[in-house]
Image (tube, rainbow, N blue to C red):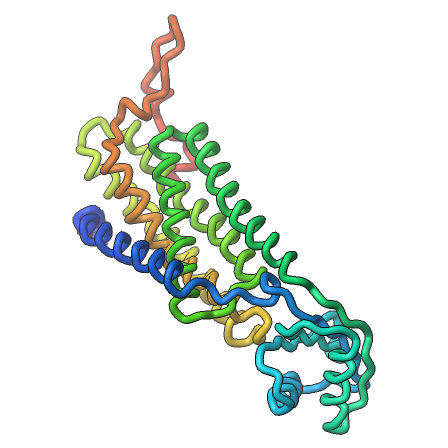
Length: 317
């Protein structure tokens, strides 16, 4: 395949359509968060945690069925540490009496088990977690803005942070729409998405910067298009292999990490899109130029043509 064929697709030609799609998704997500809100899990709302030890490893599906048949609605059942150790987390508040009731319900099926411990977490702790998680996300975006602004240029900092906020808001919109449980594992997934999407965006931004310095002719439109073409294979390969792992986690990892894997799957898909269309699109809107990216010449030293060439490792990418 020739270079002309490889670069026949005009990524920036679809930037207006991509802008409309992004605006619709972000506005819809914010509206859903305001109207429906998030379905916070027990990490944020509080509840009772009961630790049990079975004589033989139980089927978690049977444990869930027994609790549902006994009238318990909101609960999570998972292994911890070993197959015979089971953690039951319930949304309702309680004390040792509730833990004893859970033990009797599960013993009724002929299972041999013993109660290890029980613990109640109040809603005040959950409220503190909500505040701290929001601050963690904002702090992560602020640090990214400062780092990219210093590493590249302030316009690139804006073009890197806005896509990250774009990705997080859309993921939260999906969770608000389908009322999937939002717990600490999903919060961890959001922070992971910020790191993943940032890495993808930095690769594209670095190539754009080098091409602006290297190419003596061509409009910003053409230079950004060429830069995306030069990195698109790497982007697709990285996202594809990551999605394979995440899909395996979602289908085989069990209920405990389903929402964690789901948030990452959405984040990888949206993050790949935003690193191409949201970030590059913002650079076009802000009017990035060669002058923004030129290395200031040292006083009394004229830059040679060799100094202006990109590093050898970048040419091999």
